[in-house]
Image (tube, rainbow, N blue to C red; front, side):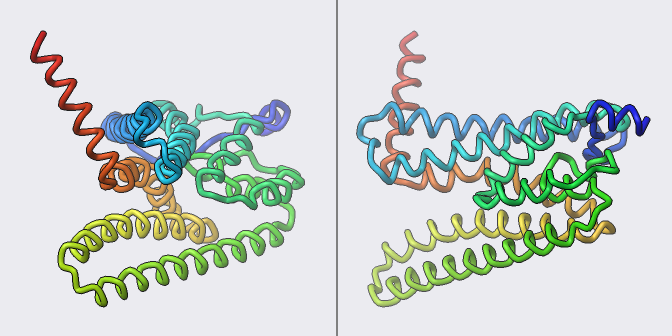
Length: 272
């Protein structure tokens, strides 16, 4: 088995550990989440690209987020859904496919440093063939090696801590400034809108932050692999479904255009 695996550069993906009885419910739940997330993001892209009144830099910036969500989730979820319905011993992926999946998965996570991380990983020889994760990522790839991977670990942790600190710092300063403006203005309508908008933005950010940090740090603690897998799935599914609602429908211009399109569609259906 091992010789065949190494010769053909095949890897075995551990995937999600689900019982035969729960495999179909889990499959349906993840499929619905994927369809919902893809549908919301595609609608947002179509709405912004087809409505001339929305052709502004801010709205084009909103297009970048759904495109990123579609890419990151599509790279991970379809393969994961396929593996759920397979026997654990039949979840094979080629090494090249695994590297490609890991690369685009890290692009979704905004890891612009990943070319260097990928270089540090693929330089290593491989003595194992099992990806101990629901999908391929950089940490799973360098775990395939029996060489010293301390450089990968140190670089990954330093970069992760740096990004997390800057991310938290920028969010803290932004919300501090918003809070200061709200306190100074004493405008109830403005304050209410700010609280409504910021609370939803903060909720999505915290979900991504906590699940992403959990996923990265628990890669170093094998005893908590199930918690890490749950965090990795949440990182890819939850924000993908919530981002179009938070950043799209909460924007007044986009919300009004969406309501107009739904209203026109309903009128056309009623006439028929």
